[in-house]
Amino acid sequence: MGEFCLSEVLMNRGILFAIGAYLIWGFMPVYIKLLAEVPPLQILGHRIVWSFLFLAIVIVVLKQTASLRKAVVGMRVLGIYLAAALLLAVNWLTYIFAINGGHVVESSLGYFINPLVSVLLGVIFFHERLRKWQWTAVGIATLGVVYLTVDYGRLPWIAVILALSFGLYGLVKKAAPLGALHGLTLETGLLFIPALAYLAWESFQGSGAFGAGDTGLSVLLAMAGLVTAIPLLMFGSAARSIPLSMVGLLQYIAPTCQFLLGVLVYQESFSAARLVGFMIIWTALVIFWVEGYFYHRKTTRSV
Image 1 (spheres, helix red, strand yellow):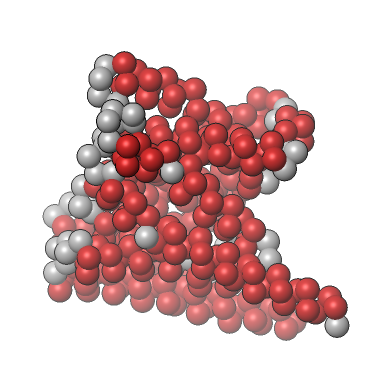
Image 2: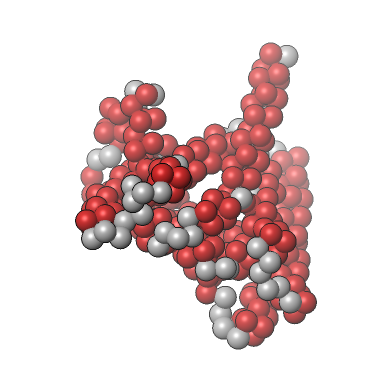
C-alpha cells in the first residue's frame, strides 16, 4: 500500500513538473519579446552565461562537483557534449531570431513537427523500423510541410532548423553518458568562455545591453539562466517518473501555447491557406500519438 501511494505521489508530481516545464516553454516568447531591443546573439550569450552560473551553483549546493569531475573523462565525452552544445546554441539562436522577428507561429510549427523528425532520425541513424501508421503520419506531415512551403513561397526554414537542431540534439544526447543536470552544466560550460568573451567585447565596444543604464533590461538578461535551466530540470525530473506516452502527449502544450500567442496576442499573419497546412500536420500528429498510445497499451498487456 505504501509503495502504491509513493508511486502515485511521484506520478502526480511528475505530471505537474512536466506541465510546468511545457508551460514555461510555451510562454517563452513573452520573455524573449521583452528583450526585443537586444541583438539575438547577445541574448544567446546571456542565456549561456547565466545558465552555466546558475547550474554551477546548483552543482555546488548539491555537492556534486566531484561526481561531475569524475564523469567528464576522455575526449569522447567532451566531443559528445560539444556537439550537443553547438546544436543547442543553433536552436536557441534561431528561436530568439524567430520570436523577435515576428515568426512565433512558424517557430511553433518547428516544435509540432519535431517528434516526427526525431522518429526519422532514429530510422536513419539507428535503423529503427517504423510501423505502418507511423510511416503514414510521417508522410502526411511531409505533405503538410510541402504545402506550407508552397503557401509561404519558401521553405519554412525557421521551423525546419528548430525541428532539425532539436532532433539532432536529442540524437546526440542518446549517446551522452551524463544525467540531465551534469549534461546541461557541461554543455553550457563548454560555451561559457566564448559567450562571456563575446559579451565582454560587446560591452567594451559600447554596444552591450547589460549594465548599459536600463536596470530592468539587465535584470531580465540575468534571469535568462533561471528561465532556461528551471524548465529543463523540471522536465528531467518529470521524465523519470511518468510514462513516455504521457510525456509525448504533454509535449504539445508548448507549441500550442506559442501558436496561440502568435495568432491571438501578437497578431501574426495567419491565412486560411496556412491553417490548412497546420491542420495537415496536426492530423499527422494525432495519428502518430494515437498509434503510439495503442501500441504501448498492447505491448504492456502482453508483458
